[in-house]
Image (tube, rainbow, N blue to C red; front, side, top):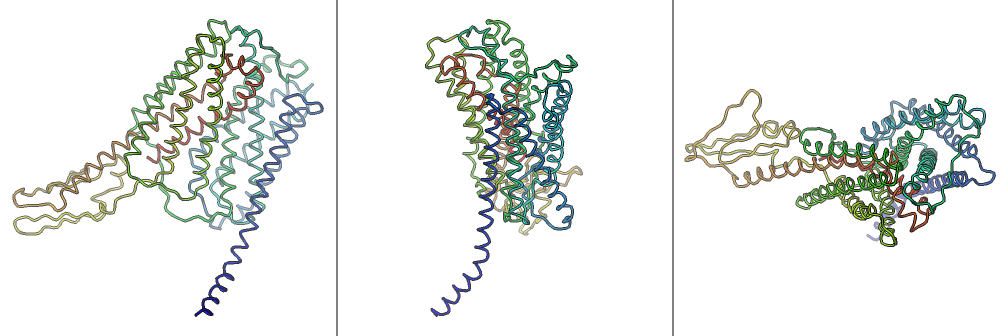
Amino acid sequence: CPQHLAGGRAMEKAAGSPSLGGSYPQKNAEILSSQYGINLFLAGLLLTFAWAVHAVGISKSHLLSYLITLMLIQLLWMLWYLCRSCTQRRLIRDKDTHAGARWLKCGITLFAVITLVLDSFKIGYYIDFSNCLSPTEGIFPVTHAVHTILQVYFLWCHAKDIIQSFKTLERFGVIHSVFTNLLLWTNGVLTESKHQLNEHKERLITLGFGNITIILDDHAPQCNCTTTTLCSIFSQGIYYLYPFNIEYHILASTMLYVLWKNIGRKVEHHQQHKTLFKFHGITVGMIFGLIVLTSTIAIVVVYLIQIGRSKIKSELALTMFYLHAIFVLALMCTAGIVALLIYRLEDRSLDNSKNPARKLDAELLVGTAAGSWLLSWGSILAIICAQAHPKYTWYNLPYSILVIIEKYIQNLFIIESIHREQEKVNDDIKTLRIVTISRGNTLSLTPSYKEIYSDRAAHDDGEVPCLFKGSICGRENGSGGAKEETSQENSSVMHSASDFSFCSRNSVTNHKRRILKNIAAFLFLCNLSLWIPPAFGCRPEYDNGLEEIVFGFEPWIIVVNLAMPFSIFYRMHSAASLFEVNCKT
């Protein structure tokens, strides 16, 4: 027996060693590729920082040359991958059904189209200032436009792929693409922030902050434009389109990161539930959400018109913004708490299976929320420590506190929603039988599963038939089915108590699901509303001036420039996640 046992262990070790040894090269390739990407990003980040602070010997052409090189390498890799995919079209590829959702592809396509408009504006701007701009500023938007078109096509076709061949090479290609998009995102954030900073410095004068040094830091061309009107349109239009370019690159990098995590992954093949968005049953949430969206757009327009005009108008604009934001955030907190309480009352298990896309969604929600939390704590500390407090700054205190609480609650709601298993049909419903005893005879009614629980009834409004006291109560079809009636004196129904309890439970579940769908729709529109102000230059963190007095002008501006892009991305990512929650609920 010991000999047989030792022989079995030896055979098991021999059989397991190839797979065990085969995993080490792939793990090393994953580590090496991640380190390659980080170094690629750090080198580009240092170039970006050197250009921003006017480092000696570093010009914008050096930064753009580096970015152009990275985009060209990514273009070569994507073309190679697409060609290889075409030649192996007959092969059955594994797919990650959770990655590359359709709504995400549509969103990145919309942002990509606006990014192409931005590139065309940059090309026109270069033509008008071609006498004093380096050739790289003309090559960059052309390369970027080609890169955008091919990358969107690549993500539409291959975002769900689970790569099982040439895995080491593909890891480097995908991680190169991830960090290339992150560097392009960083470049867009810096360029847009410098423009916002110049406008902010001019606005502070109207609020009476004369002790702050106003020095404009721009990289305007040192020559005259050939066509003044076109130059003005191009220069102004570029900065209004940058928020969409920023969102495009961060979405592309997240989708590519999921593709990188899926390389060599073993997946279990199971039926994927289709998640369709329906307006039925979410009227209340949509109405309140549209009211918030409309009012937010109006507030932003008034804010941008009034801020910087005079001290009184600027203070009124800030007060108006804070009061509106406080009201919206309070509503969002209330809706999130109600949704979490409903989840606490339900007894549903969580899906703990490994899923890179879902894990990344949760990490992005918490990670990007830290940006606005940093700004909120800075504002709270400034209010506590400041010696003089203009009246409008006191509204900043509840606003900052509610920003922290609202994101905390919303993150809990979204993360729990995406981890909850979808509702499954109860096995007891599938095998339901009705046994009635009428006048001493046993009558067995055994309708088919489709008659008792139809998919259409389940998906349209969640109604399922219930049985109570010998009557079959359910949805009737258009032809009007005949009703079975039995005498109460000579009939009895098996399990009438349990049937009644099932019917009541189902009714309560339908009401809970309807409330959750309305909450998800309301929060979806609210997050879109709160994305608009910072994306289009409505930033009270810049304009109230209190934080600059406490922390100093330059330190606080650096904090805002670093944190604000994460706050903007959080709102867009939350809206996308809530859209998915609404489809799954």
